[in-house]
Amino acid sequence: MPRYLSMVRIDESTAPAEGPSPELMQRMGDLLEEITKAGVMLDTAGLLPSAQGKRVHWAGGELSVTDGPFIETKEVVGGYALMQCKDMDEAVEWATRFLKVHEEHWTVTCEVREIAEG
Image (tube, rainbow, N blue to C red):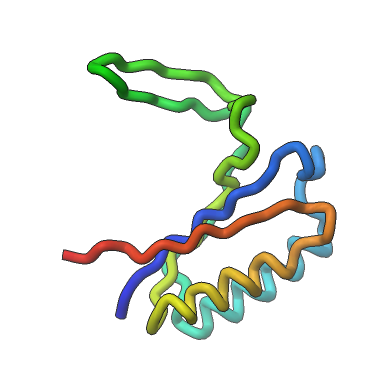
């Protein structure tokens, strides 16, 4: 069965400074329990804010390292889910359900990509 990576992209400018509400965390926990019981979830985690990250870039034979936050980027990867689904439609359905647990003030995008096997 194919595996899919869902990269959860957030707009840090619209995300609450204190992080997700307790209600959001409860809804997310309930959904993660459901997707795990369905045998779909292989791994998932949220990431710390981009201010605590670094970007390593290679171009033209030169390497650079940039400290976060990444001001020029509107959306950053805020978390991920590694899922095993029967097809892309099922992976998108789970990603859609994940997005819908968020309150309206969040701006969240899930980029779903099949993992190349072999």
